[in-house]
Length: 70
Image (cartoon, rainbow, N blue to C red; front, side, top):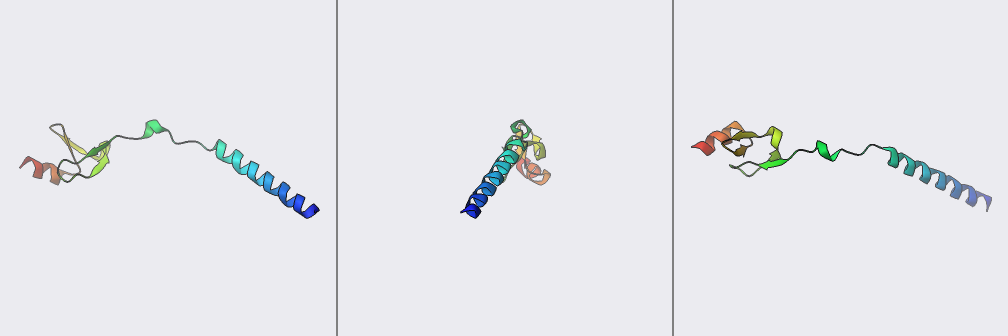
């Protein structure tokens, strides 16, 4: 019986430690996310900072920008 109580006490301590650790971990800042845009030529979605903008449209690369212009 005492072994069972000891195991329960250890389980409770481990649970409380894990819960405390999860509460103290830093959360991702949602403001750090970037808007996604769609390539007009192929439809690929990519972050706005990685896209190429031309005449109000967004492209995934220079090749698609040039192909769209033709």
